[in-house]
Amino acid sequence: MRLNGKTALVTGAASGFGLQIATRFAAEGAKVACVDINADGAKAIADQIGGLALTCDVTDGGQVRDCVERAVGDFGQLDIVINNAGWSHPNGPLLDVDYDAFRKVYAINVDSIFHMTHAVVPHWRDIGGGVMLNVGSTAGIRPRPGLTWYNSTKGAVHLMTKSLAVDLAPDKIRVCALAPVVSATALLETFLGGPDTPEARERFVSTIPLGRMCEPTDMASAAVFLASDEANFLTGVILEIDGGRTI
Ligand SMILES: NC(=O)c1ccc[n+]([C@@H]2O[C@H](COP(=O)([O-])OP(=O)(O)OC[C@H]3O[C@@H](n4cnc5c(N)ncnc54)[C@H](O)[C@@H]3O)[C@@H](O)[C@H]2O)c1
Image 1: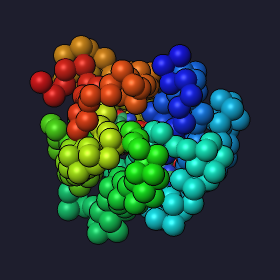
Image 2: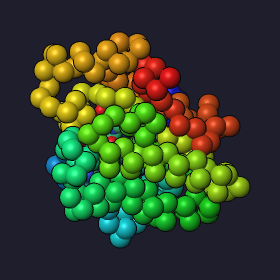
Image 3: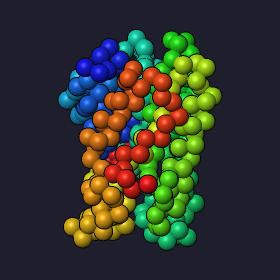
Image 4: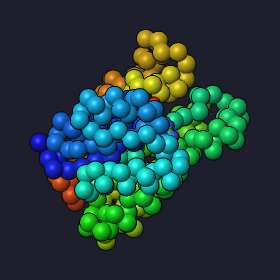
């Protein structure tokens, strides 16, 4: 098992990519704290994998700090954090997205990483290292129209990842990002820009050289690798999980 003896915290673990990452991390031997604003969902996945369920709004610095303290208290230490929780405003004309929605998408996708960094880095300095993986997107590399403000949050996630990587390398803290292309999670219709029909999927898939959408298992495989000791010389990497979409 590739994560034997490791401890991990996954945000947005109740659904989609986070659920699959939490499941695979447990199968690879990690103890996993399943964090989500959806308390029932966090409990369901934690019960299923023998993990720790933590209800938390990642936009709230105090709640994020409490989560990290709970995970460290239960596990003894925390080795890996996956900042995966995310949201998007609806796909549509950019002037239709009001300032509240703009602030909300930044709060969930970007402020959350600020809060998590403040919460976990002092612990990682105490224990001599750690791994942070941030979930970005192909939207932050090769943006499509209709999602400008969301796209820009993922650009911020990618640059934050690289900057944290250089800042924290002396502390033996690695920081990488996963940049998936569209996947059939709860966010699918937002990214398709309309109802989930075979035609809409086909239009999207025709822009992906390998000819399919990203599966949550593709994300889990990449996350296991980047979080494991096999990747211990990799930091600041933005790994595209995109079937060639951003080439
Ligand atoms: N699905 C895609 O096509 C796609 C593509 C590229 C990137 N992403 C990114 O992948 C990540 C995961 O998304 P997903 O597709 O699995 O979506 P999802 O909606 O299935 O899962 C997101 C999870 O985050 C949780 N969450 C939302 N706001 C939260 C908050 N304030 N505090 C705590 N938890 C919160 C939700 O409850 C949910 O469980 C996001 O960062 C998203 O931007 C998704």
